Image (tube, rainbow over all chains, first blue to last red; front, side, top):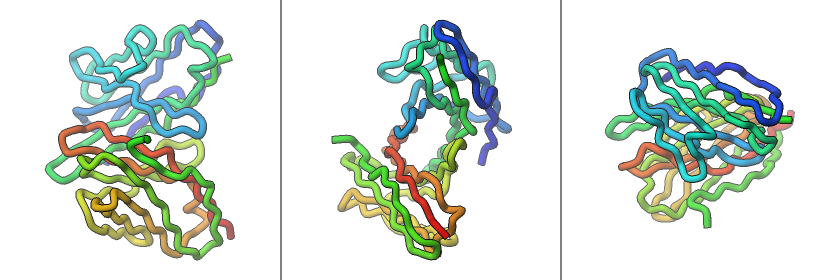
Length: 116
Length: 111
């Protein structure tokens, strides 16, 4: 298993500002992801954070709005830029390990963002 | 039609009941099936995963996959108030490392 921590755990931000969320894992992992979870909704993948290269974004998410850094195999950041109230959500960092017949994905505790 | 369908509930049961949580899916390429438990204000926690069809048991929890019907289940025996949480199913194809998640079912176990 992997232990994941996120900072901050929650924040209230003003419209037009940016927030950077940090994700730290207790072991080196290849696959690291950022998700968004809106109230009553399932998890929506924002992007895959690739170490040493640009993140891979899912449809509907762009680098200018959600820049991601992955400087090493245990750390990543997600920035929510030029925020609007529609960005209010829980943002989750996740890592995955995979084998021939196994797949285990773990999540951090989440960052609860409110934009006013 | 969504790739993964899951009734959001809430499902309310008395303590000690057997709980059945279910998901249906449409993508026959899915081979890995996971269940997550998410407590309020916490991140999802991996509960069980199954590769291909069959059953898997872990304590009070049993995961069941029926690929012919494209239907997966999670059974919780002797349910406890501490089992009150949202349960999300997730599944993925063998060639992908990105799972598809259900919406989650809210479970309430009352004493």
